[in-house]
Image 1 (cartoon, rainbow, N blue to C red):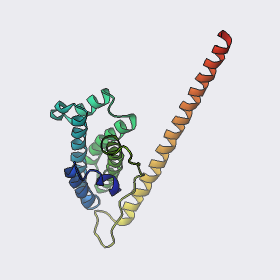
Image 2 (cartoon, rainbow, N blue to C red):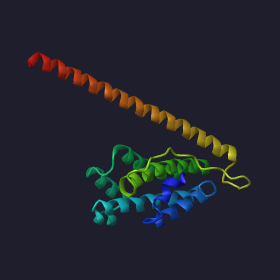
Image 3 (cartoon, helix red, strand yellow):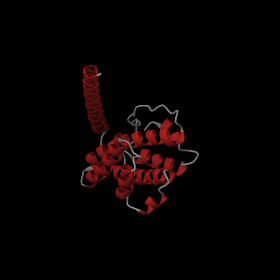
Image 4 (spheres, rainbow, N blue to C red):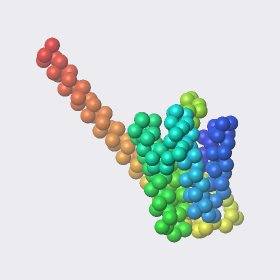
Length: 196
């Protein structure tokens, strides 16, 4: 993960950075343990968001209930809601996966954590923070991983391609929305010119 976004957590949220260190340590060697830490990180981050928004009582609720409340209150935008949802889905998927599937899930969760944390830093810690793209973790030479390096690289390539597909889909949605907005504006202009 890009360490720069997590460095903003050091002052007030150092304990969250400890999760990130553990995640990075076990991502390729013990993905099940990394996923547990990813879940803990996301749940604790959600609790911090609830506190900052004045919903401290949400901390006694389940993660699902907490997220639902934050969504209903408009705290989380669509992309962040989607990232939180993907973390939950991927955790469940990983529970029934082989080691390759667990690594794939851990990497996908990792990507979503980057998105969520970038939003958190920009929203609550440093509004001038410029969100940077996610970078896949770097494999270390001579280290023994749960699967071979080629398998990990294949997973990363697949996820990169999936990410590009998702970006293109989002871009198409924005273009379509802008087109619809322009059509509405031109219709309103036309009606105004007729009736005024």
